[in-house]
Length: 115
Length: 254
Length: 113
Image 1: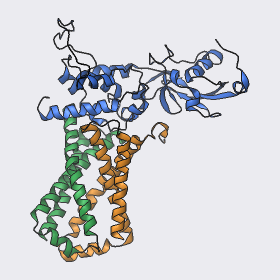
Image 2 (image 1 turned 180 degrees about the horizontal axis):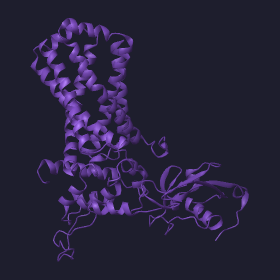
Image 3 (image 1 turned 60 degrees about the vertical axis):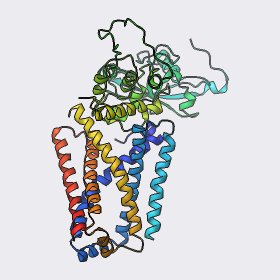
Image 4 (image 1 turned 180 degrees about the vertical axis):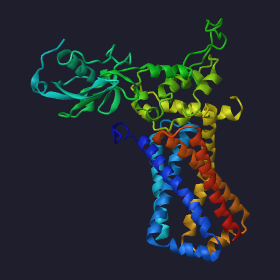
């Protein structure tokens, strides 16, 4: 059953979904990330081998996706914390826009640096 | 009292899909009513009940947005049907879709059982508890509450709630966790937490705490988006979280 | 789970979030600086080997991320899958701790190798 999206299209709902889905994907990726790093970091030669593997375009693309997810989740978290701890009300919609901007900017910056 | 449709527009008809059924289940049925220049969704439901389906169950009282009893889901969004003009929710030629409020048990057709909604007001400590008269008696002295004080302004921001259930029906957390208190009950609790005359602050804060309370709110702000009175229950819930955080830190809670 | 325990999980979620907010920024900036001109093991290890501050940072980062992620997964599982109860709570705690330990192991590798 697909959810009825007619009442779930306001910016703050979309911000919630982005925050949740990015968080879910990061939480699933995190053990993998830590485990793979732990395996790779067994001296300089092993780490270099891992880095060479990580150099292929598919891994680079996945890394870019992770950075965007991280930036999105951070931005969504800032929105929630501003509402909860600072009691922001009226500026909530601007906050969603700023959050999206931060995430987008981080993605682009990373892309530029890699290229 | 039906007036005779006048003009070209009045002759065209409006398609309405109305959910018919009871707690066991139901389905949409289609009706056609005269399309008028000025008609509310409640007018349309009343027209169907009077002219086509005398046994259609629905609820209303004041028709002017004071009582909060006519809320339904109109084209996927919870609204007061008496204050919703058809032309605001359906483009010319578009059909209307009317369902009972979500997140509440259906009694029949468009009438829901509001008991779980009001039970949660009670569970969230929605009753004022006078500080100097715990038994509910009238205090000997009047309290002086400056209207401009920060706390009074916080309480005032949420005090106009009339308990229509629109926010409750719009809240996904309620749909996902049937025990969740919901926006209206916690909005009420927040007004009382800010009422300096109230003596049950600690009990109330503990009642709105945890997975069934404010800590499960994810600030989707559907309640704030839909509230027909433009209240901001989402911010009220955030206020409860903030207060609980600091009270917890300073050991003012169990 | 009691209302009190639920509140404490929320507090843990927010406190780790505050730390992670800063840590993620440091992490992202480090990545952006490090990927300039390609990554090499020598370069990474030169920064982290024997650097107690970096180790402490990465270990705290891993612990906070493991806990934060587990609380988030618990919320999602309760709301989207209906997985509630003590058994699930312990399972999430376990997953959080194991994740964090993997992270600390990786940070230790950077510190000593």
